[in-house]
Length: 110
Image (tube, one colour):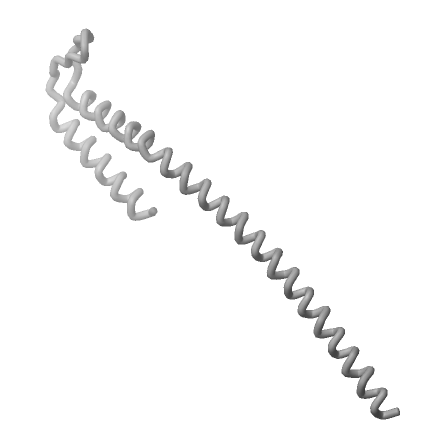
């Protein structure tokens, strides 16, 4: 995750440097909207919109992954509880066996 963050920051910095080196004014038309702005501003806005779209596209998979993780954690907790119950049963049975063995050995000695 850290490597991805570092790469993302480097790409963003390169885009900003590129944008500021290309600061000529340009005309932008988007549907019926016409305006003039610096190429640097347009490139930074475009980068920001691209990042936002990327985040929005990745949200469903992140949510789905987090749901799976929480389900698996719940299942692990359930299995741990079940294992603890079995261990308690085993320990109880061992105590019973030890008590029976003591009882049998005391009867044999009598």
